[in-house]
Every structure is written in C-alpha cells, then in structure tokens.
Amino acid sequence: MKPARTILFCTALLWSFSWGQEFRVVRPPTKLPLPYASSAKISPTGERISFTGKGFNKLYIANIDGSNVQELCLHDAVGWGHQWSPDGKFIAVRANHVQEKTKRVRVELLDVENRTEIAVTNLHSSRSRLSLPSWKDQNLLAYTSRSGLELKRIVLEDSTLTLKTVSRQDVTLARWSTDALEIIEGTKVQRVRPFRQSRQVLNAAWTSDRGFSAVEFSGRPSLYVVSADGKTTTLIDAKGESPCWLDDRTIVYMVTEDDGYRILSGNIWISDREGKVKKNLTEGLNEVALFPSAAKNGTIVFTTESGAVYMMTISRE
Image (tube, helix red, strand yellow):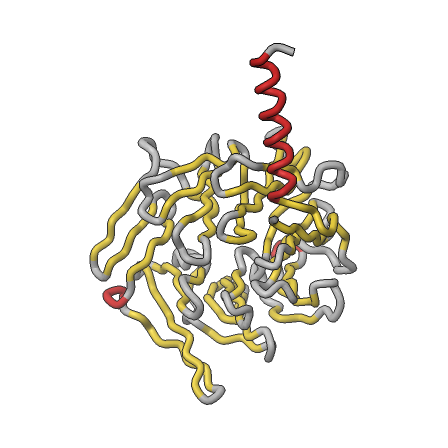
C-alpha cells in the first residue's frame, strides 16, 4: 500500500474509532404505549414526557416509560411549540380559546404537579401576533405581542405563585426574531444577521448557558450553530430541521425528504457542536421519524408520521 493511501486509511480508522468513543446507543428506539401524538417532548430531568394529540390539540403528560397518562390541558393547538421550564415544573404554551365561534389566543403556564392553568396574558385576537412563549432562564418567560417583547418572572413565595413583569431595562439577553439575532441590553437592541441575505428563522434552541444557539433557517443549507454574539456560524447539516440540545456540546435534529406534497422519509440525527461527528440514529426504523426532544441524561424522544412516540438513550463518552 502506498504511503499516502496508508495515511488516509489510518485516518479513516482513527475517525471511526473516535466517533465510537463519542456516542454510544445505550437503548435503541423503543415504541412507547401512548395514544396518537403529533409531537412529544421530554422534561429537562428526563422523568416525564409531554405529548399532544391530533392537530396539536390538547396536552398530556406521562412517565418516561409511557405509563400514568394524564390530561394537562384540553385547549386547541396548545401543543404546538410548548416548552418545558428548565426545572421541569411548568410548561409554557400558547392556547386557542373558542368563544361564541370566535377564536382567541393566550399565553399560559401549566403547573405540571398540580395540573392547573395559569394565565400569563389576557385573551387576544387570533390576529394579535402573540408569539409562542420561550424560557430565557430558570424562571424568566418571554413572548412578543403587538407591544413588542414582554418578559414575565415567575416568583414562588410561601407556595404562592405570582408573575411579575420585568422591564427590558433590567435584562441582557439574546433572542431570535423572525429574521435576525436580537442582542438586547436594556433599551439598546442590536440586530445581527449571520448571512448577507435575509433568511427566515424557523426554529432555534439555546444551550443552557445561552452561549450558542442551534438555528434552522429557511432554504438550504438550513441548520447552523450560531454564537451568542452572532459573529460565528457553523454549518451542522444542510438539511437539518427542528434542533434541540442533548447537552451543551451535542445537537439532535431531524432530516426529512419530501416530494413537495408529502414527507417521504424522516430520520433523527445527532451531531457534535462543530458538525464534524454525525450519526443517523433511526436508520432502519421503517418509520418517518420527526420532532426530536432530548434531556441531559441522554434520553431522546420523537414522534413518527403514524403518531407513535419512541424513546431511546444515548451516552457520550
């Protein structure tokens, strides 16, 4: 064997070995005994699963093994984009309320333990541009309305929960708008676009320290990791969608193929933050795998086009 080919062969072996040391499938995808689900998300602690019914209507919770299914919220479209709080105590949602055949929307907190609903906003017109809520830290909730960015702090004192409005002057944070990274420092807002051309932001997920975000942009290539200042971008996957973080170094996402009318295939992939080490986790599943969600203990859940919910476990070594 020629020296150049020997070096190339050894390098390939070393890469394969190093990947094997990075990720290990502890438990392959296992179908859970749950009813039809449009999407499912795992709690940050990895102990529970939330899932939503057809059309993202209603929201349920269950143990990680699919047992003890309980109704949490019965409103329309409540499951679309629902978000667990970092401590796993609450789920933030935007719910549809139909009153006398008129649809209205409201941001709400769902208390997981007590299975109660807490109104964060008043009922808004369905045309009010009320965004999906998102968590900015352990107890800071953000959403946008026609008034712009609004922040609410969850305060729990003597078992009494209150929501306190937080002024933008009192916070420093980075968030994705529809087409740019907004770096907010009090009343100062810096808008950063990572690319020369404007691209719509479809999905974004932040690391726990908010140092990086995994962002799905419209068009191709789609999935990047972007630093908190917006100055550094790393391509993860040209076809990546719906990213989430397994830990602050590892991204889980889906890759789908379609014919313009329907999804032909879908798989769940895992990658390091640099996009150098990647693996198809659902190859051979014979199901269209969609919408992954991951917890730091290595557990991943995802749904399929048929409405099934699967769970698997990954270790990083």
